[in-house]
Length: 207
Image 1 (cartoon, rainbow, N blue to C red):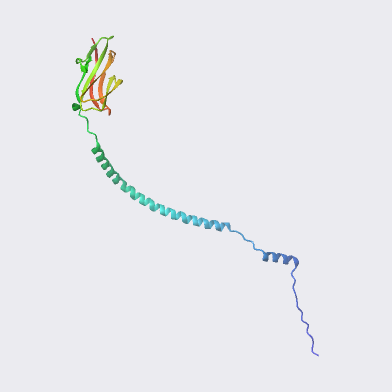
Image 2 (image 1 turned 90 degrees about the horizontal axis):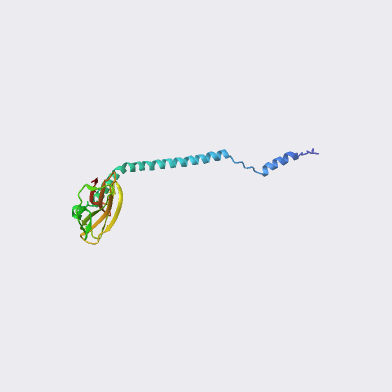
């Protein structure tokens, strides 16, 4: 009779503690962020962008430098052109000999004409008060205006505007005169642009 052989099957059961640990690690996945590597990557990208910006900026600076080197020549050319423009638009100087027919100091005006011509220096008493007139006749000034100015020791005493409505035109202004320690008088007529048309200076002298 043949001999019977027994087959033994061994089954290994995991222990409860170990089984729970392995199953937990196999069933779940833990993700960890490597912040150092992320920072290094971002820094590298930033450095590349800065390098590109720097080189592009240096090219712009070179082009600006070339432009600046050409500017002085352009400025000189513009200046010469502006000088030509200014010279061509420069106003001609007034010829007072063609505008002023007569101008004189007088002691009075009668029928728009001076009664006399005052001799200079003007002689007065310390307590004397005089009225002095400055007469002027103009031509070629119709439609314009002039100003009579009286100055004493460099200070403006009075200013009178006269509108000219005919050609020729006669006008006069007057100023009260008294004796002082310094009597440097100037009377002048100027146009609207303050161009001097006529002027007379005089001093006072005690009698």
